[in-house]
Length: 201
Image 1 (cartoon, rainbow, N blue to C red):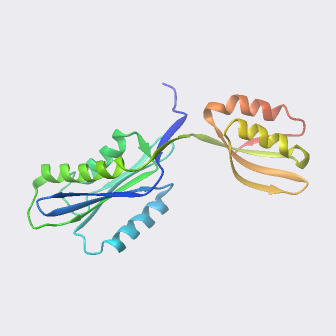
Image 2 (image 1 turned 180 degrees about the horizontal axis):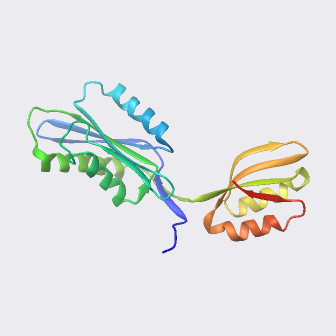
Image 3 (image 1 turned 60 degrees about the vertical axis):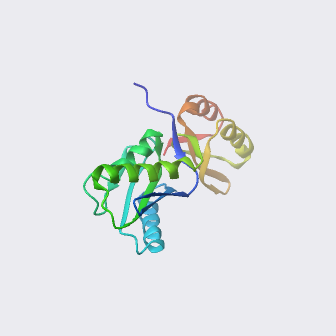
């Protein structure tokens, strides 16, 4: 089976409200790049909703979506985090955090009711947010004379590469992200340039 060359990720923060028998469930979506951004987003939600009875969440990270975590935050096991993650996965998303904040309304919903409520709040929030398909990139280090700069940038642009960092003196040192589905042709073109040094990042 071939590895994927693209991934899908949410592009904005959004929220949506679902109510059931007096309980309010607020689904909040965040685009996140790493666990530090996850922690910051969770702190922000707790600060904005200090009186909520539960802050349940799920996230998935990585170009191939290999990292994930769920939290029921005190709700019965499997009734909150898993249903939230299920909605992230059903859309094939990564780099995505969904938090569902619950304000208890006085009536117990039971596990099936909770699963439905957390799933629905996550679904409603995810439905409102734009999603983009992005290239999975491989990092490469480029080292070349400044006179080649324009030609190098033309090649990088043509192959949708991203520039991660650059240092410029007499020589230029670029760290770039090369899309996997453009890699072979792009590296071939760069390698053919006189005075170009390429190294995998």
